[in-house]
Image (cartoon, rainbow, N blue to C red; front, side, top):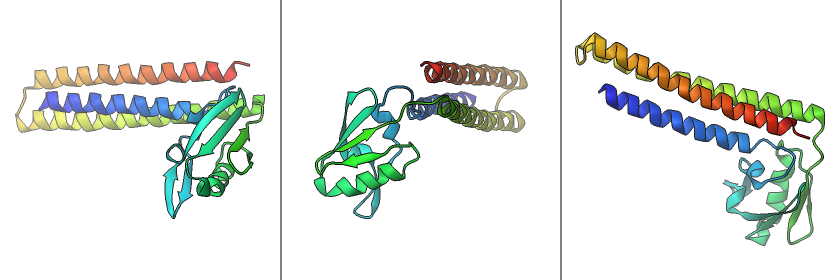
Amino acid sequence: MIDEAMLEAEDKMSKTIESTKENFAGIRTGRVNPGLFSKVNVDYYGSPTPLQQLASFQTPEARTLLVTPFDKSALKAIETALRDSDLGANPSNDGAVIRIVMPELTQERRKEYIKLAHSQAEDARVSLRHIRRHAKDVIEKAIKDGDVGEDEGSRAEKDLEALTKKYVDQIDHLLKGKEAELLEV
């Protein structure tokens, strides 16, 4: 029972790390990449559809992104979704592709992105603590019900703390890397 709780906690914690990596990829640095637009949903025939499912991306220059829709009828909807996103993009439509030229990052905008990264890292840490709390409740219930001894339960709690610290350290490492990337001019 304790082993199952530990395995479940580790699995959920590793998924939290992956989610954090995806969120950090969506924060813009100096070069434009399609990952910036991973959270953009387009109103496609009445249902919100991820932009990656509707178009292909090319980066001919560092700050330019070409979005080529698979379905030309979705061009206007994609342009509207990009304009309404909080990425600061100003798309231009030439009838076949959408060209996005991202503005140069200012120091102020870099600081905003760093705040966003800190916020996302804190959300991930909170998620890890929730996972830890749930696993700890399972361990304490097993001890209370007499399924495991107190020694085994306290050993499992120590292992859980070490596991949580390992994943929190990973989040901190990812955050430091993203900060360095954002501050790089």
